Image (cartoon, rainbow, N blue to C red; front, side):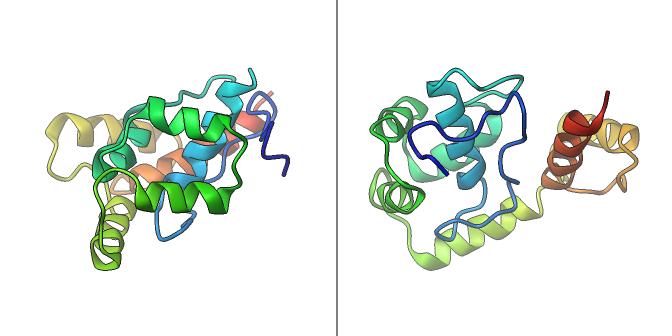
Length: 147
């Protein structure tokens, strides 16, 4: 992958939020969206959205600081190290726990969020108790295979 330009999200989806990069879920997808934003290829996706902010809030970093670092042309590996060493320092155990929580997120403790996700899952024929990540993966596939 060309780190300077990244993926063209008008033609393909960002990486799945389930991909673990440097022990963090969401990060690979966030990198893809950030690079696409910087190079004018974001398409219908959003950077610094609610999903990205799960990661940013956990680490105590801002979307703007992340974007500025990515804009310098760093590799995924360098971005992982920057995320690990910037903001609120987290132990490997804390990161693992957070990653597992994100993988299992189906808004079970949020009535409105759960209602929204169930509606999206039903529309895409995903089990109603499917996770946010399940929905995003299927939605990405549908977005790039539909006429």
